[in-house]
Length: 280
Image (cartoon, rainbow, N blue to C red; front, top):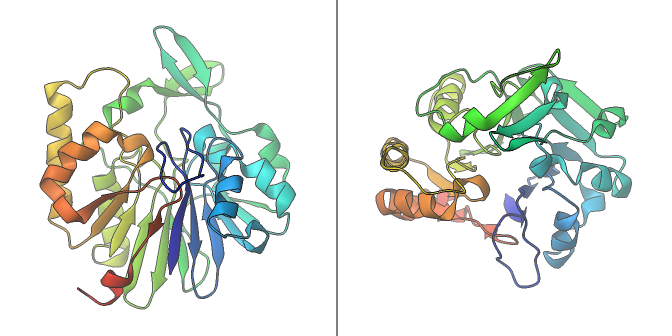
């Protein structure tokens, strides 16, 4: 299994662009797929630098209905119109970042809904013996506080986004099971609990943002959430690869607890899973 970060907030491989967005390339025995496409077409240039031919992609999975994960879908579809695209139907909703200063649309481009290769899901879906998607995370344990500024507009009114448009990819090869999320708006611990209920055990690896990044200062209660999350993650025999909405300071706080079990992934970085396959 080969996994490459095609775009993320921070610079990594020389020449690769970075932006507030997230995109991963995953290559398995049967598939070449994308999970998200960042906020723009930056991932396309980075794919070229990383030696990845986007015309050979057969699947695109959208983790949730926000622009910083869906911004490159239309450009990708123009390059590779044959690749199937899977997203939750609710990902086409009207999503906003709303504060006292105002509101900003952060949903996907409505033109995406017109793509003929698009499949809209309503819940869990097994694609084959390698790939499966699940949704339906309802737990609120250590739910990210930053979610409170994220709203959905329904019937002319703003309501709290419940992130029912979020879905999670499980990639399996032999004894290796990788859980891929986008921002983990539903809370990484709640997502893991849903995974464990479905698969009767923890994944070998998790690739996900943790949605702890803040533009302002971090309060003591924010640090408590980071530390408690890290302690609970450490209890699992899992390695965590993160970036994007986690934030660099939250990463350092969690790294102090998780040590080598937590790895930051930058633009153009390749994730090495061989040591997991060997069970070391």
